[in-house]
Every structure is written in structure tokens, then in C-alpha cells.
Image (cartoon, rainbow, N blue to C red; front, side):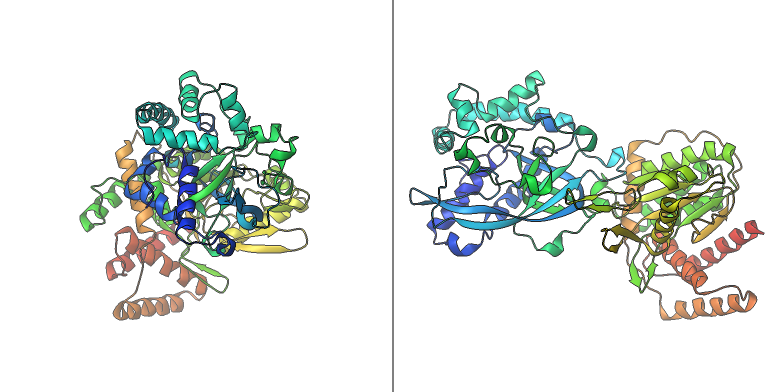
Length: 587
């Protein structure tokens, strides 16, 4: 372990260099390590998760970036929107006979020269963005956390000034800086220390960073010591690491001495640091839907708790849907649906829902109610007004731009668990152009096969997705044939009322937890299901494999809605009754 002569939060690079020095002193050879972790990951995992340091780490967003000090520890929550390949950098080098490292930074601590001991390592570049369609309740960012931390950091710094060891280490870090580095220049010109700058920024509201594009906030995450298979396109991660934006280095780039110590490959990825901050990742973790829910410590998956939440959520959905209880029951199963397995081209577990019998007047009322309910319950949701003009002009598919070497995002590039509400009530007759026909196909393929087609110009690639589709239309949708078509029968449109945050969080926990439950069908129950399907086919020869797959999916979701992992006769009977009532409405 490394001693506490540095601050992991304010001076994470001090921790990196200290562990590197101890590793070299213990016999580690930088010439043969290829940059493999020398204890940094374990150090920061202990600080963040065992010592609860993560609660003090500010979250980087377009609104909070102006308060965060460069080279401090931050965390960024977002979706991997593009994977930009590898970047080579000088990972280890000797200065006056002593090994030093540039890992987790873009700027060298000392002049490197052209020593034969210089070692090139590589790191992966990921372009990450806020999750498309992320609803406000699932966004855990807070300006207050940044300001509070800035104040506490200044107070801690003043306390540490009384400690000779801390003062000595901070002075040593300054002395170790390159004589012509931006930080050293600032210090010689009488500017304040990093700790003071952070506090002053909070006190006076001064922006300490370049003019980042807040309307399209992105973060270039640099990954170390991680297998490629651990990080996939469109996954949602929390990255914790060292923030750099290096505006001063770019300003002083004419200085050949500094240019030789600058490693960020700006030209390759066309992402200037004045617009896109860099995060050198020390620790990362993939976020599930449960990680976005602020669940109560009292919530446990006990039968009585699940039953109570199911009843209250069903009651809420019934009010939202104008006292249409059958629509509410189908909506609950729809919100619990997810892809559990893929068999050939079939995505097992999806359950798209088409509510029909909504004209423009009724849609103006219920669309807003449904959209608000979905936003309150699910972390990621988007509403698409399906019109001829939208289909003809929208960019739905992600497209590779080879001039910038960037993947240009489309509407359908989204995170797992996203929900799309498609409003067809505004659709009128018209002519689809080539783009409109292509967009129609893309939407249908995503809903039916749960795949998004990425356009790489010279070829196209389909990538797996897991999203929910709700279609609102006057008649049965011909553009998007859903798994469930239900004629909507609202009885009233009374006020939905206000739901307290504690109840909403409980419902969010319920949906996020139960949708991932395992499922099985016992031998006896399997015989019952098979007999019912045979009898149904004899009564209606129009029934096919898709209908039976839908019934099995509904059975699984019905069992899950009660917190059960095994289909019971009661659950199956409820599914058959819902199907009977649905078909009666279609007559």
C-alpha cells in the first residue's frame, strides 16, 4: 500500500507516480511490463469503494465541468457512442537515470529527450456521451456536489498545510514539473495552487476550463489495462479517472520542448481538447438499470412487497390510461419486457404494444399522459412523432464519416433498456422518398428483430439492441406491426394526480428488478401449456408460431410481475383471459 502523503481526489497523479516508483523499487521492469497495472487499480478501488471515496468524486457534466479542476479525480456517466481505436504514447522514460511514467496523463512531467530507454505503450480511445433519452430522475449529477467539494477541498488543504509531510510532497510535485510547463509557468507568475484555484472557482463562479460545447457534451475516455470485450458500443458505464483538457498546452504548443511532451492525438480523432474533455480512466463499472434507481433500503423482493407494488403500479397505470384496466395490464407486461435470448433471428422476450382507436383529439390527451408516465418510470425514453416529413428527413441510422473518422449517431443508436413511443396519430398521406423508405425499414427491423443497422458506407452491419416499442395510432399500424395490438377503450380522463418520489422510486425498482428475473416452466405446467396451444390451434387455424411465442412471453412476464420465476397455472390462466378480452375488442 501507498502512504497517504497524497490526496487521491485532488492529486490522483501523485498516487499513480508513487505506486510506480514503489513498483520499480520493488524490481518491476518498465521495459518489459507494456504498461500493465502496477497496483493503481487496487489502490483506487479501495479508496472509492471500501473507504466510500466515490461519494466525494464530482460527476462530470456540461453544467458541472466549469467547476472541476484539471488533473483531479472525476467520474463520468455515459454511453459509449464511438470506439476510436488505440493511441500510442510514451508510457515510461528515464530522466537523470530515474524511471518516470506518463500513464494516465497527456503531458510529461519531465523532458524526455530521445533516450533509448523510452517505452511506447498504447491506450484505447472511447467517445462517450450522455445516454440518449435519459430522464432527469436517472441523472445523478449535481452542481451542489461540485461546489461543496470545492469548499471542503480548500478547508482540507489548509489543514494539511500544518502537516510537514504533505507540504513537502506538494513542493516536490512542483519541483518535479518541467521548467517550461504551463503549471510551472503559472506558479512562477504568482498564481495560486490547484487547491486554491478550485475553491476560488467555486467562490467566484469563475470558469476554470475551455469553452466546451454544452449543447453536445462529450467526453473522450482513455482506457488502460482492460480487455476489449469488457467495453462494447452503446454500453452505459461510469468511468472514474483523471480529468485533463490541456488548453494551456495547446496555447504554448509552439514551444518545441513542450510539443515533444504532448501525446494527445488531436488530429486523428478531430476532437480538440478545447471542446471535448479527456478522462484517463482508473476504474470503470458497467451500469445496469438497477444502478440508476435510488432504491430504498427497506425494499426487498419479498412476495408481500412485490404484490403491493404491483397493485399500486397497476392502479396508477389504469388512471393514466383512462380507467382502461386491460390496457393497464398489457402496459405493465410491456414495461417489464426485455430480450432474454436470441434464437436465430428471433429476439425472445420482447413485447411491443400497439394501442389503437386514438384519433388526434384523444391522442392529444393520452399521449402526454402516457409519455409522462413512461418518463417517470423508465430511465431512458424517447417519443417519435411519426410523420411523412419526419421519415423523409430524419437520420435514424448511425453513419460512419471517414473524413472525421467518426461514427455520426442516429436516433436509433441508444442504450439497452431504452423505450420508444411512436406517435402515428399525426401521420397523413404522402410520398416517402428513398430516406423515408429506409427509415421505415430501420424502425420495423429494430422493433421486430431488435437490431440496428449501422452504415459504414462500404458495408452495413446489424448490431443487437434491446428496446421497448409502444405505438399509438388510430388503426392498426401497417408501418410497425407490433406483437400486441389492443383497441384502447378509455372510460374517463380524470386527473392523474401527483405521485411522491418515494413511491416512484419503488415502482422504478420494481420494474428494473423483476424484468431480469430468470424463468422456467415445470414439466407439469409445460404439458398444460402444450395442450392449451393444441386446442387453440384446432379452434383457430390462423394461429401460428408467432402467436404461441407471444403467449409464452406473456406468461413469463406475468410470472415476473408477481416476482415469480416459474410459470404457475394461475399466471397462465390470467394470460389466456387477457388474450380473450383483447380479441373481443378487435371484433
